[in-house]
Every structure is written in structure tokens, then in C-alpha cells.
Length: 443
Image 1 (cartoon, rainbow, N blue to C red):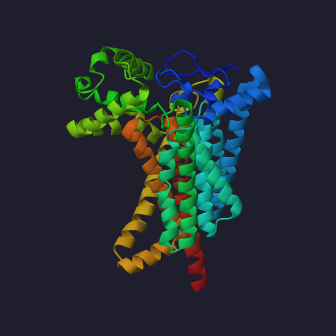
Image 2: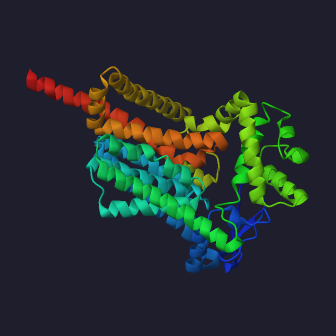
């Protein structure tokens, strides 16, 4: 059975699944064993799609699954928006932007990003809906657990995403709902344990060594490569100094070439290479902390996501037809200048509105006594939930900022930042309407 996945990073086409032997054996002495490098979720989906739709139709089967999960995630966002009392017209605008935006574009590509975003949105939305309803139904518990387990199998970042959900567990405890908080946290941590332990045991069965993935070395190498623009001779301090001539550009193909060359010369495996690069990464922060901060937080890929938001209706549809693999394309072509300017300005205004609205509420709490502040915070479910979503999204983005950032990796976080912006607008309008009604009755 031959299934190929074309990697769009300057690499040649690589074989994801050659035959069923990868289920029982993996060669971790070679960097090119893709079944040890990649998490198994997406290759399994491709294998199932090929079994059902054949050689010619497997890509269509994968895209259908992507579109199905985009629809499911949109429905869970709808439920969450309804629980947070979104005005109906704001809810329609937000969901329209989400469905026709970047999630749709990535759903048309044979990449892991679409399913990862959809599963993340489903899990986070279910957590939010359960909190607002003050109960976790059996159906929601099953959906939450399965979504998180699949995230753990889909991509390495499934682990930090599950851990970043801690603020959403914490608000249950803050409201002294101990039983619900324990159940929610047990489901999340249980999903993390199941996915992590299954991967470790499966790889131990295949190779005799416990590990999750051999791909960590490339992420660390990319993080080190970003530092070179601020410390030109940095490679001299690393285990890759003998192969620095291969690092003409900090691109995925160059990174893979450096690591593969090191493994070949030193006769080591990718796990040992990852261990050495981990030591170099820690050393880089100790030797050049300021430069590392600049490299991780000021590079164009890190800040590029800020200009994009869920306010780009139809941009995913346009890009899907054009085949542009660049989220900033709608800003440069295909849309009238007035629409681009309106979208960017509105995105910025929504962001400012969100920070001011939530920040003002937080400052007011700080000005009160501790007992009263905790009581007010615990009783304001909507704002408490939105702060939890903000902290979750910020924590997940922070993890990528520390290693290697690309817009497509944080689609779920961008979705919820957009969600919070629209919620802020809806909440302000709701409060004004409520005050007007109160004043009318009083008068």
C-alpha cells in the first residue's frame, strides 16, 4: 500500500506509508523514517481513506473528513456563542467568518493543520459550554475525552494544548465546584496520559526504546537557527558547528540536512541528536537570553499572526481556488484596498476593545478586598470564562513562540482571540441594552 504526502518545505516527496510493516517496526537509526518522525494520527487517516476510496480517490476522502470536522467545530462554536449570549447578528458574522476563513483553506490541503484546529476548537468549546451550563453531560464528556486523545495522536503540540486548558479547569475550582473540576481535569489529564503512554508503548514495541517522536530535533534546530541572525557565530557553540555550512538559510530542508549529516558522521540516531540539541537550546538561553528573546518574539512569523484574524470572510475560499499557501495573501491581492483596510482596522479595534473591557474588569477586582473580589469573579461566569480562554490561547501561542511559530500552527488560538473580540462587542451592547431597560423602568 503506497500513500504519499507532499511536504511543501523544499523537500522532495516523501513516503508516509509504504506498507503495513510500519505498524510493527520502525528504524530509528535513520532520520528519514517518517513513521517515527510524524505522529500516527494523520497517516492512519490517509491509510483508511485509501482503503475506502482507492488509489485515485484517497485525497478526496481526506478532504471530506476535514470539511466534516470544520462543520462540527463551527456547530460547537455556535453552542458556545449562544451560551455567552452573543447577539444573533454578531453570532452569524463570526461563524460566517470562521467557516469561510482560514479553516476552510487548510481543510482543502492534505496537511495536519485542519484537523488539529477543528479538534482543538471542539474540545475548547465543549469545555466552555459545560462551564456555562454548570454541568458536564455524558455526551460532552465523551466528546471532550476523544477530541483530546486524538489531538495527542495528531501532532506533538497536542500535549501543550491539553496542558494549556488548565485555566478552563481552574474556573470550576474557583467557583467551588470541586466535583465538576475534578472530573474535568481527570478527563483532560487522562486523555494526555492515554495518548502519551500509547505512543511510548507502541514505539517501544516497534523499536525497543520508549519515545514519542524523533521530530523534536528539527524543532530545536529551527529555534537555534533563528538565533543566528542576532549572534552570527552561534553555531560554533553548538553540536552542529561542523555542519554549519549547510545552514545557508534557516529552512526546513537545511535543518534536516544538518541533522542528517551529523547523524551520519557521528553514527548516532535522531533521539541522541535531539538530546544534544536540547542541551544546546538550554545553553543558548543561558548565554544569549536577550538575543533569544529577540529571535523568538520579534521574527516576522511570530508577529504575522497578529495582522490576521477570523475577520477575513471568504479569504479561505479564495485561497483554496488559487492554491496560495500564505495566510497574508488576502492582504496583498484579491481584495479591494478598502476591504483590506476596513478588516485590519476593525480587527485592531476589536482587539483593543477586548483588552480594555477585560482589563478594566480585572483592575476593578484588584481594587476590592480579596474576599469580595473572589466572590465577584466567581459570580461573573461570562468574564471568567473569557479570561480563561484568553490565558489558554496565550499559553499555547507562547509555547510555539519559544520554539518555532507559523500561523497555521495556532489557528485555534486565533479563532478564540477573534471569538473574544466579538464577545466583547456583544457584551458591551448587551450591558447598554440592560442599563437602558433598567433606567426606563426606574423612570
